Image (tube, rainbow, N blue to C red; front, side):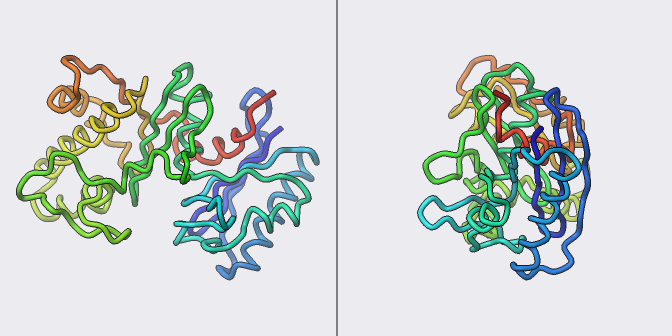
Length: 280
């Protein structure tokens, strides 16, 4: 069995997966304190409780925003968690006495959907999270790709492709740059448009912008399928209106990349964290 942990800004979610993908247990715990020592203790405690209730030799995988810097071992870009700029992997392994695998939460999302979700059986999968922010993960042959710098799939912090005159240079992003995809395709970004021009017009602009962003991904990666999660994934227009728009932007005369909604929903991240340890 495998333990998966999804670390967020306000909570920790824990799951224990059996070999067939069934869930032995799942729970969610709010932080009692955002100070690092207390948050580290809570994380280790919840993993130990899961081990005691399931199996002492469970593997442990953690999905969270950001990445583990390969040079320093510190968590980077996880600004809304108590673990940013901290040696979480090292500290947790010292407490638990075992190896812990940590990956970006979007990678975990994509991995879960590639293994037994909406992209089951696909070789190359792009997982797109459209929520409070915009994240992405790449899975090839059921293995999440980190990349040299641990940022593979981070399409949300590239500029929106084919900007119009009224879009350029774009809003300033939290990362400090102008025109990031996240500032056009996140839930808050779409809601700002809705408040300014009304729902139908805002949704039409969102659909075209999403088609442009997905086309960039297809031109570079050409995935077998794009799986969409996050709060915006509830909009059916993503799956009905966006695919026909791809032919305006993709470097192919008849693009047919499936765009599908995630099967596991909010559970994809925590399930994918457990799957960082493949079944042998």
